[in-house]
Image: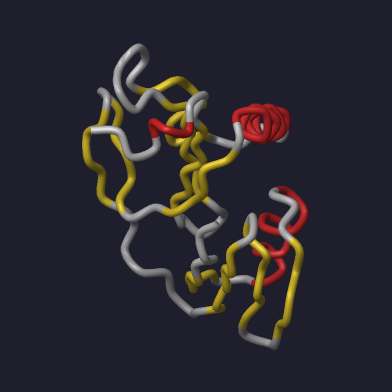
Length: 138
């Protein structure tokens, strides 16, 4: 089993971070202080650090005829968990950067993917594979 990663990201409002990461995405809140919150981000440690000003917005790279925001982060879910999250986000009327779809359909590395941003402009990608052997396919 892979080891959990640790990622610290900027936010400008901890209450909005709590609503997005805690309430919407369902991440369990860990330790916190007046300027940061630790989250259990699907088994990984994500820390939202409150800053006065957000860094510049992401750039974009073309992947499968879509403009993928860079940088971005996220996790690989099981297909049922990905489908449930996509449905939850659609019901919450999240504005997708790239709406849920199957990337590289019929090719090596076929995957379900979706991109959206948190309230601060941090880009997230969630993906799933029908065949996890395709995760590192070439």
